[in-house]
Structure formats: structure tokens, C-alpha cells
Length: 108
Image 1 (tube, rainbow, N blue to C red):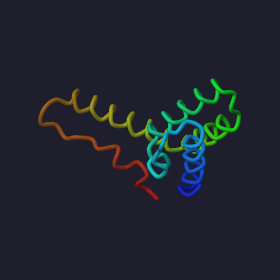
Image 2: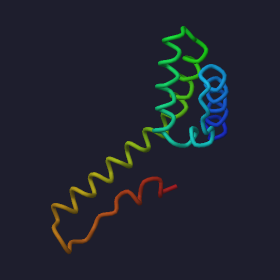
Image 3: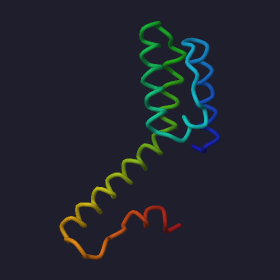
Image 4: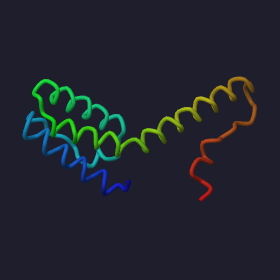
């Protein structure tokens, strides 16, 4: 899914949340920040469950699916960072660092 697709879904979420809840959101930030999008999905699902709004629940599901590749990438980066820190701690002070994360997406 392209960034334009994510922005389009985020725009639908923005309009729906604005009309139904009065909440103003940042569409572009929603399309690139996994944590922000996840929080708005949570908010939308809570509102949809409380008010029986199937349309808003469907938009939340679409946004969650669109953000999944970014969420996976963020989890991989976090795991690599933690692994680097553990290796550095085990190697001790003055040892060469292992910057594995710089190779992520670097071989294209």
C-alpha cells in the first residue's frame, strides 16, 4: 500500500471522526505514525461500539490494515536496536559497535 493510499484512508478517518465525535486529527501524521494511527483506531472503535457505528468501525479496520506494514517495520527496527544494545553491553566498554540496523533496507 502506498503512502497516498494511507493518506486517503486517514482522510476518511479524519472526516468521520470530525463529523461524529468532533475530534480534529492530523491526516498526514496519521498516515505515517503507527502509534498515532493506532490510538485513533482505538478511539474510533470505542465510539463505533458505543454508538453502533459500523461505518466508522470499517474505516478503523481499513486504517489498521493500511498501517500494518509500517507497524511491522517499526517492531523490526526496535528489535534490532535492542539486539545491538545487548551485544554492546556484553562486549564491554571500548569494544567495536555492531550497527546492524543500518543494513535494514540498505541492500536494494
